[in-house]
Length: 362
Image (cartoon, rainbow, N blue to C red; front, side, top):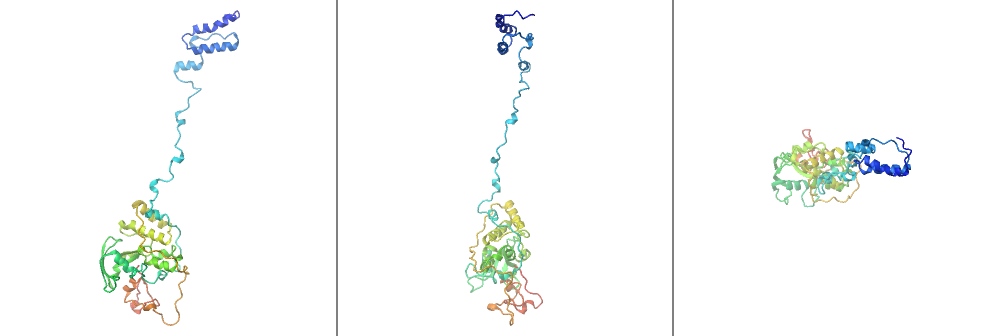
């Protein structure tokens, strides 16, 4: 059909024609067509589309499928989901934080270092025999027997300072031991240094003053009355290599070791620390810090010793300072001066008449 004769008037009617033809359509297509004609200045239009397909491709797709065209997809829902900010996650679970006043919390204050050489160690570095650090008139050994035994009796005239008999509920073995003072029976109950003197020497006690080490060796915090043979099996081991056979006592035992080292500024090896931490964490995280024994650590009165012991006298026969006398090996052990040999205070030939000297048992 020839469109050249169309006038301006006919151009103005064009939108009405399109509207009539596409009456079932929405107003939007007609509005779009009118806008296109206005822009074209009433130029000759393209041949009319099939009314069934009039409108944009996007509109046709919307009518046919009811969905948005693929050219402008909506953002995927998952892209709007964000993870919680990292700061909302605590750096350490609350349950792993040791409570104040517990042995586990105190353990974390103990320095961790390697074991120092045993060079220069001697029992006498910790004082000569049992002493009286709390100044109650009784030596350390008898103080602990009085504390740990029940039903005890005392030697008359000693102001209840020498224990003759008693009963021990042994913490190492969970057995009951009858203590009777005597040559062959006293060693059934021994006094354990919870932190062995040799172990202490290798972990900081070399830097303590002589008076501080004397108190350390007699401090009730570091002493326990225990089964003699079991104590001998411990030797100078730390918690990494020895623990009491009585598992029910292990929490208290390692808490005592921790408290002693904290009190005297000693350190632990990594293996020792880990062994103690393992027990406290898994068995008793709320194990309390033990009482400090009522004895304060004195200010160092003397500097730390050299690695070599003072040279013994070389002129004349060995002397016996203070007229020390031991009736037998039991008395030597009770004074914690074993082993004893020629030249030591209190030495007598009867101690090795059979070729065997008194051995160390504590």
